[in-house]
Amino acid sequence: MYVVVVLIGSTRFKDVFRKVEEELSLKGYLVFTPSVYSQSGANPKCGVEIKKILDKAAKMKIARSEIVVVIDEDGYIGESTNDQIAFANLLNKPVLYYSKGDLEKL
Image (cartoon, rainbow, N blue to C red; front, side):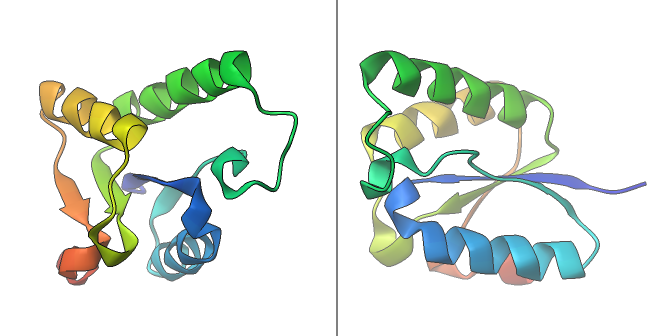
């Protein structure tokens, strides 16, 4: 059985998300990642309503995961990510932080 991990954080760090996704996948984890990297400025179709949908999808991924990994490059955590961390804590999910080297714990 695979351990399910979800990656959350600012989608401006798309390259870091992809790197961590690959690293964890090669270790045998099943990894949820953002489906759209709207915050990177790469997708002009993502307005306020779409962001609400994507934020809800992120919470659904958190609910279905066993471990939450925050991609907080340079320690940056935005408002949406803080909200998602609070949701993960409410569900008693372990929350690990990329900037703190917590990936070594997996």
